[in-house]
Image (cartoon, rainbow, N blue to C red; front, side, top):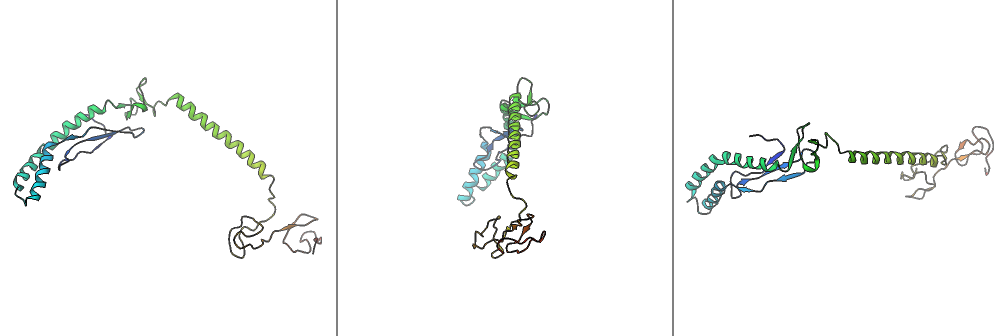
Length: 214
C-alpha cells in the first residue's frame, strides 16, 4: 500500500461511533481535506451491546464479548480497505512535487512544471513581493533621512533630568514632574562660553563670567 505521511487517522475502532475517517493536509500551506465518515458496523454493534449489557446488569455480557472479539479481529482488514479508498480519493485533491516529493494542494502546485510553488515560485508573486520589499526599504530610507533632519533641531548638549528626584516618576525631560508637579532642575548656559551650568550658579565654572540674575 503506497501512501505519504501527510495524513491524520481519525478512525475509531470501537463504540457506537466506530468508523473510519482520514484527514490529509498540504505540506506547503497546511490546508486540510477530510474524507467522509465511513461507519464500522461491527464495532458499532459491539458498542451498542456493551451499552445494553451495562443497562441490563450484564445479561448481554457474553454476546457483547463475542461481538467485540469479532470486531477487533476484522478491524485491521477493514481499516486497510478504508485507508486505500481514502488515499485514492486524496490524490484528486493533492499533487506530488517532482523535486521535493511533498504532497501539496492544487493552489500550491504548478501543473505546467509539475513542481510545488516552493520549488518553482510563481513569477508574478515574486515580482509583487520584491516590489513590496523595495517600497518598504525606500520608505524606511526616507523616514530615516527625515528623522535625522528633525534630530538636527534638538539641543543635544543640555542635560535633562529624566526622573523626578522627589517622587521618582519618569519625566521624559519635562520642566515639571507629571506626577507631583516638582520643578525639574534644568541646566542653563553660560552667556560667555555656553558651558552648561546648574541653576543658581553665580559664576561660570569654565570662564569665570558672572551669570545674569545672580
